[in-house]
Every structure is written in structure tokens, then in C-alpha cells.
Image (cartoon, helix red, strand yellow):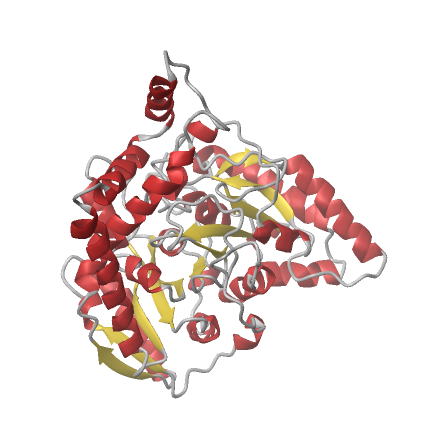
Length: 488
């Protein structure tokens, strides 16, 4: 039985009904990893032995007649920028190649309380900087739908693992689209929660005011289950929101009658692949046919969002990555004096994209340029947020494409950073505003998945999930499985 093809909620029922054991399920997924990860390369670190031990403990609970949590015993993958005590956490960077954290990220503690079975740590763009997973310091991950294409990024390994059946669910992080864009490229569901809804404690920082952890899953039901497990206030994270967390599974209602959908006209402009636009507009028509109301809204500051993001994010990265200096932890290259040691360590162990962003951020923060660049970017961020606030006075959710294209060819944009950055054009504003957004599959173009992005009000993941679920239940895109027979 190909258990790796099932969703988490289907497998939970099989475990409860004793149709399968967690060890049997976990071994099935590990066999799948063994069979296809040579092509996909989703994992940096595999923890198969540990996963089987964790699965055996769940089976013991079931044998004793104990009730198990919704994610108990169901194999998942964790993006390699979340601290896992005793298991390597590298951020896909040579500078952290051998780093083993002495503590767990809060999301890992919460998942362990649900009897986590962790298959491994997923590949990513180095320090989450990139949109293709080609910036990993170790190797590039391939898209399971066509292994000649990128899986997106920076959570490319997390999305590819789920799409390929190498994990049933996974965690990613999203700074400017790093959950949603790879979910779109790989034909899976990716949810970026409201900033502060999920603890960032133990997430290795890229841009602290933008980063957010969220689920990547096969369907919307699984996304709701993972959100139930990881959301909530955490005193160890100063940016964590102290607000009640609803049961997201109660939002799994296939009804959008009276729901007001906003269509931002600035998001449907030239540069978007026509097949992508066709799929998204067709999906919107379906929601209208189901009783939703359509309203065009204007978000005039959208065109400045990307510029503001690449100043704010790089400035914060410049500050956050200054700790990697070869002194306390991580890689170290000896030099004649401490300055030479700093220079050699950072020059040799950071990849090109990370160095590019550190230099951009350092420049933006430097004396004489702070007001002209960083401060102005913060003001633009406020304007972008106000666009969302005004739109949400009229509508319940906003719908846009997740990305302007489907997955592009490996190497296609590697020598053109600007072209790569433009892939974030529809996802970045959501991070600047701090609002929740989900990407769900809504069609195919040239054999590759197309993602639709549903954006909600702050802390209103419930309406985002409800809208996504209603669309999903009237389509079968989430049931299609990557062929893994094409490409190299």
C-alpha cells in the first residue's frame, strides 16, 4: 500500500482504526525517500532511525488504548532553519555545516507534544534567501512535477518533500513568499500565518520583522491541523501575539455564500504568464458561482512593495547574520589577526546570494544612506499596510496569483538576481503588512501546477482556510500526485 500518498487526516483515521501502524507508515515513507530522493534531493539531514523510534512510541500508545493527537505518528519534514535539539541545523549554509543546536524551537516542542515523527531536515535556499532552492550551500532540490525545474524557495525542500511523498506534511518559513511560492510551484498547500501567530523562537533569523513559520501540506484540512498544533502565544518570543487561537478545523466548511472577495487590480498586470492568469480567474469564477461576491479594489502602493522589501529584509539580514563570525559557533577560517579571520570565514562560508544581501543591507544602514533608503522603505511599508487595511474595510479576503509564472527551469534565472526577485511580486506585500495568506493549487499550465493566493485580515486565518477549503472541495487539484518520471 502506498501510504505516502495519503493525507495526514486520512492516515490519522487509519492509525486510530488500527488499519496500519505508525511504524509501518513511517517505514513506507522512508522507503519512498530512499526511492526518489536521489532525484528530488529534498533533505539535507535524514533522521530515519529516530523517526522509527518515535513511531514505535505512538504505536505503544495506541496499543494501550490511549487517544492520540491528530498529527501523532504521521511523518513530517522540518525546514533546516528551525532548531532541533541534537539534530543538525544548517540553514543550508556551509557556515553552519556542523551546527547541532542545544535547544528546540518552540514549534518543535509543540509538535513533540503531539508525538512528532520527523523524517528529516529539509533543504532550502541558504539562510532562506532565495526563491528557487538553487542558493543552498549543499545542493539544489528539484521539482517533483518536472525534475528539470526548480521547486521554488526558500522552503523548496519542504514543498518538494510533500509533493513527492517523502513527507506527509512539513514546516516552512516565509519572509517574502518562501512558503507560498514553493507550494504554488509544487502543487501543494502553503499557509503563511499572521506575523506573530506562530512563535519564531528557535527559527534562525533572516529578517526578524518579516519571518513567519507555517505549514506545507497536501490539502487544506492538513494545514488546519498543523496550525492547531503550532499556533499560539510564546513568552520566549517578544513578537508573539497573545491572542486566543481558534480551532482551525471548524473553518473547514464548504460554503462561501456572501463572502466578499477583493480582486486587487494592481496584481493582474502585464508580466504575468497568461496561463497562470487564466487558471486564477477561472478559480475566482468558481467561487462566485458558489455564492461569493466579487469586488475590485485598488492597492496603489503595491508597485513599491518589492523595493521596500529588499531594503528592509537585507538590512535586517545584515544585522542578524553579523553573529556568524567564526568566534562562538559555526565554521571558522584562521587568519593572521581577528579581522582577517572574520573576513576569511565570512567570504568562504557564505554563498553568493547571502553575501549580496548582506552588502545591500549594510549599505542601506550605513551613515548617510539610512534616511534615504532604510527609513524611506519603512515609510513605504506603512503605506502598503494601509492599502490592506483599506481593502479589508470592503472585503473579507483578497485573491491574487501566488506567483507570476509556474516553476521555471533550473539555472534559468541564476545569473539574473533581479528577474529572480520579481518572482516575489505577489507574495512580498503580505509579509510587509503582516497579514495571513495561503497558496492552494488551482490549475495546471504546461504540466506544472498553478497556485492561487488567498489573503486575509490580521489573525483571520479562519476565513482564509474556509475560502481555500470551499474551493478545494469542488476541485481535485490537491488529489493529483507528482509523476516523478519526467526530467533528469
